[in-house]
Image (cartoon, rainbow over all chains, first blue to last red; front, side, top):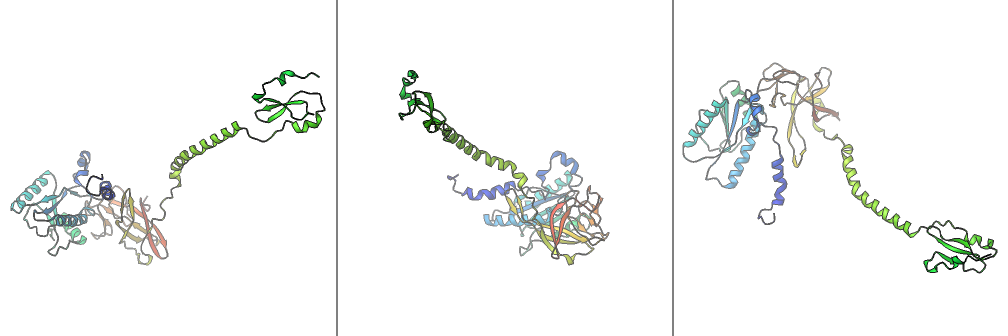
Length: 169
Length: 221
C-alpha cells in the first residue's frame, strides 16, 4: 500500500462506506432480478435516465460538481417515487455535434417499446438544450444553477402520471 | 536391647536416616517426604519420653518442594488459561449484555401543535449502518385520534415504497401517487397495499412529542 502514491489508508473508510452503503431507498435497474421483473414490471412503468452531460470541455472538478448536483436532483425523484421509477445508468458523455438529440430520442423510444410508459430525464448541465419528443419530463438546473424544488418535482411527476400536461422546469 | 545395626549402617549420605544428635535419644530419625525428620526406629536403651515431645511426628504445615512446584505450575497454567478464555466468555455473553437502543427517541414537535388532521413533520435521526454513519431526514404524519391519543405514521407505502401524502384527492385518506394505494387515517390499507402503514413509537415528554423506531401498525388488527 505504501508504494502507491495516494494515501489509501486515509481513503479506506470512505471507500468502504461507499461500497457497503446499501441503497435500499431507491429502485436501481441493477437491483431487479429476473424473477422480480416478472412480478414488478406492471408497476414499474417509469424510467429515470440521468444525462450528466459531461462535455469534453469540462474540467475534472467541474464534472464532479455536476455529478453531485445530479445526485441531488435524482434524490428528489428516486426516493419519494421509489416503487414506480427505475433508475438507469447515467448517460455521461455528450459531444458538441448535434447528434445527441437523435441518439437520446432513439434510446428513449426503444425503452418505451420494452415496456416503460414514461421516460424522465435529469441533467446537471444547465446549458444542455436538446429536443427529444420521446422524453416525457426533463429536469435540469435553472439558468442560475438553482436546482428544482421537491414540491415542483413531485407536482410535475404526479401530473404526468395522472395524464395532465407535463410541466418541465 | 539390641541395636539394630542395619539402621546404623544405612547409607547416611542418602539422608534417610540419621542418629539423633542428642546422646539421650534412643531413636534414629527418618526423613519423611511430607513431615520432614520423623522419629524412626528405636536405637538406644534410654528414657525416651523426654525426647518424645521433641521428636513427636510433627505435623508441620510445611510444604514440600514438590508441592510448592506443582502449586506454582498449576497456578500459572490456570492464570494463563484464564487470560485466554475470559475474553472468549465475555464475547459469547455480550449479546445478552447489550442494552436495546432505548435512547433513540428524537424530539419532533410540540404536543400542542398536534390536531385531529394529520400533519407532516420532518426530523433527522442519527444512523450507524456498519461503517456508514449518516443523518437521514425522515418524515412522519402525526395526528390525534378520537380519544386524544397521539400517534405517528410512516409515510412509506407498504406496496412498493413510494411516499404517501394525506388527502391529496380530497377523500380524507392517505394516497400513494405511484399505484393509487389508499389508507385510512389510522393507516389501515384500503386498496393496492397489502399491509397497513407502519407506526413510529411515540413518547410524550415535557409537552413535546418524541418519535422512536418504526414498528408495525398497532391501531388496526
